[in-house]
Length: 366
Image (cartoon, rainbow, N blue to C red):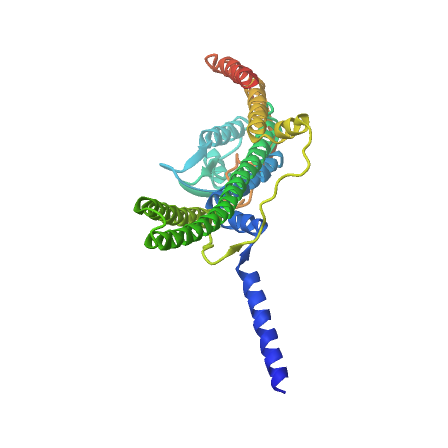
């Protein structure tokens, strides 16, 4: 029974040691993953990418019609009336005159009857205060390529944000890999310095015995002491370097690695490919070249917009009055139509803008 208890205790202790070692180990892959998740620069670029994604979606919406509800509350200096009572007076006078010519009796009684039965020819057109609520509709038909170019630019801005995100990740990954293996390398240096220090200590102990026995001179013994002092200094300096490099790695991944064991081995690349292979990979994945290409594509879209400024803008439009009770006699309940505008003269700014964009494209090509 005692043997079983001892065996169980030993197995439990061994499992705890293994689990603790696993929890405290840090592979290069884990360090990169932690660093990417904790890096504030990557988080910031991710926010920019999210913003660009929403802008790209918003740009697509400009192809669709725009429908608004507009409310207006107005106050004018006085009501607007239409007064045609002069015409009414002429009509009544003409009727009375005709009646008199035909030999009618009591024309004054006829005039009074006409005044009473013919309504006033005055009509209120608009009150001095009025409210309008209307729905408006605008559908762009042709905008001189502005809508399509804007959508393309927003899409390119999203691609640029994706490239910047990858470049930022690449920079973080490179820095983590460099610091990770710096720590691994300095750990080996520390071990070498420690072993060397132990060897020198044994050498000093032997030299001390030999000096006490008179086998070697004091100068030889002092040289051994100097070597020990230098070994101790180098060992302490290496420990300080290790602490500094460990701090750099901790800052890079956003986690303290003081009690962690870096478990990924330092390995050399076993199989090398031709130089052409690495050149083609570098050119295909070069972020700076991708950014230049995206910049060129954006300038092409800007050139399209500059040319489009010389073309007309055409849109379909409509308007519907939601509150119709207070409309004036000259206001329709709804209208539909089309609008077109063309810039005739803009001080040659459009032409110069086209030339400027062309020069920028040539600069990127160069």
